Length: 110
Ligand SMILES: [Zn+2]
Image (cartoon, rainbow, N blue to C red; front, side, top):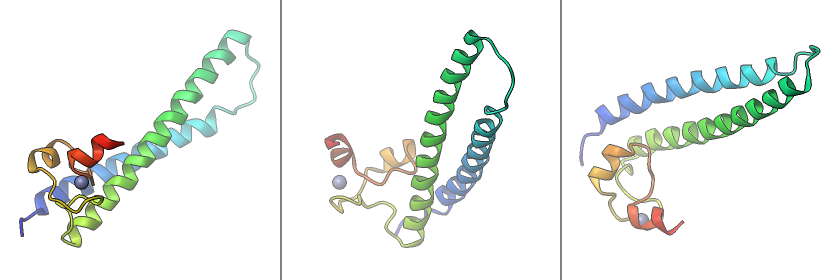
């Protein structure tokens, strides 16, 4: 079995980073509701910002889930196998996308 401890360290660091980012994003959402008088243009900009924040929040949260699962799969010795078809994931693909859970064939079917 291949040794993924370096990848695991990288994923743990990445997870901490993304969790921090997620907290920052959700903090922004809370502060966006401050009751201040604003003109319409400002409100429109805020709306767009909150949509971006929403998107970033969801995106970051999805990544956090994927990273956690990847760490779990390393611990279970399943890291390099596709969760859909069970075939080994190309190591080059894992290098580029360290928290992917699917081989290129299954991922491209989505
Ligand atoms: Zn597959």
